[in-house]
Image (cartoon, rainbow, N blue to C red; front, top):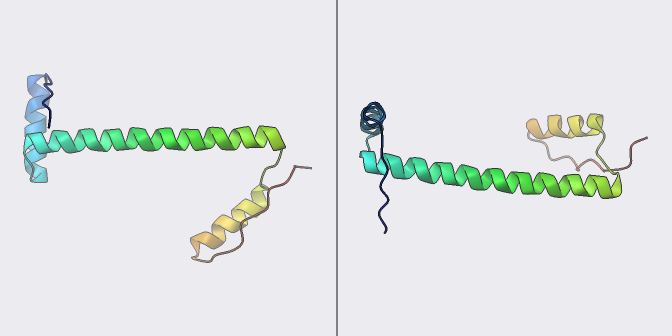
Length: 93
């Protein structure tokens, strides 16, 4: 394990100590967990944006989209715990 030094303002360090104590952790563990959560969120955001870019590229290439009414019906059924078939994508019009 490597060591990284960070500099904190006194007020933030005090807030950190309080938050860590409330969470039942040491300040070190609290900081480590916060960094891990932030890195994980950044990775998830990156994956989400890559998938969105791929899907947008596909829409531009094919012109196919899912009709909003079909998508809404599918989402409503899924929210009720049903497993309806996915709506079919097609060119609008």
